[in-house]
Length: 497
Image 1: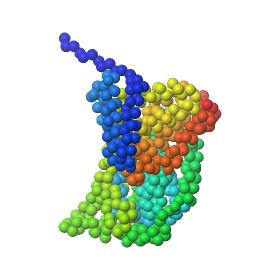
Image 2: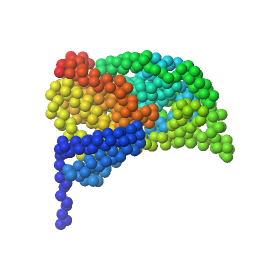
Image 3: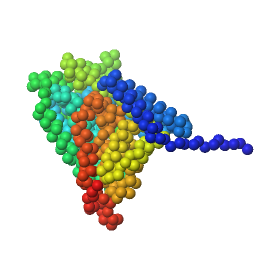
Image 4: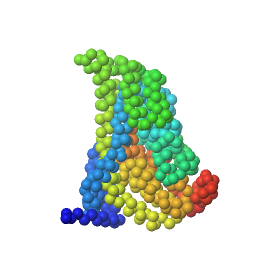
């Protein structure tokens, strides 16, 4: 009779096991930033994530996990990011064709006429907040309105880092508060709360955070030393008119994209259709520009097709005799997103290893032992969401994992589910774009061309919101207790610590 191999004995990880990959990652990322500066995300950070992931693999093998199981977990973890990668490639194509079509140049032109440096930062934040609230997507907002605002900032001589911080602040406020946002629906689903109860409960931390952020942006705007005078703005505006047909008609691709987003068309087809529409708009309304870029060896139809096709994958390139304007207008293309996709790929692999071998759960178990009060529990949840954003590099993981791990504890302590769902957003959704290797941070870097390490200190809404949530938790402000089954949560009496 053939003997069956003995089942593998899996050993629970120790706290030291859980700490080692994180320590390795922090050391390597710090060294990467020290050695490469703002270029650290162009390869060095990816290597750091690979090395830290394989340190986790070694610990997993030591604890009895098989290589095949760990490899399968890596593949599964990476596959979770494929939807984001498709969107990212489409955004690259969209930026390229919208530059060629005159959509982004028109937005920049009108922005230069309307936005004054003294209130530019606050207006940028508020504009992105309104757009993201209506369409439920911080990514789409950043890729459209955000790209244009970065261009306007360059024209006005404003700081790109502060502008990016204002864009991210507004976009994530709108994303967080929109009932059509994925994360806004995901958090209450994980926590077991009602969507609109969840949104109402979030207003207590979210709206004050936005108001404080707008005040700071307004103060910074009034004190900004804008380097562009009227003659510079006039020169940029004239150059835009010289090289592009500037017209409100050029904004139609943006309106179509927003309409599809409001109608809840999935993000990937929405953005890619927007990119193709941009190519069509370029052919219809920028014929002289397209003709200048066309290959004279081809007939007119094939030459035009090649220009649009090249822009979709290679981006838009123009020489205007104005170095600043060239820097502003040259960009886009799927190929420009390859590095960002590489970063996301590496980060998701690292997070998948740590989740599969139980290292993340080990941290949560250690946290719960010390979270005795409601304030410390909510603070621990926020800290866990931030840590999950760092370790798994994905905001959805930063909502789902802590939600699953803390849900039972919130129920045991008699806390209403809306407390957990709000906390998951305060700690998970909000902090994701501040981390360079997180899918959201990498996306914002790829779209806005500003490193998260540069704009993070200016994303005031994203910084204030988790802090305000902790203050509310310890002061017992809007911390709702569970009510009897026949009493709706919305009528719950406010609890204390």
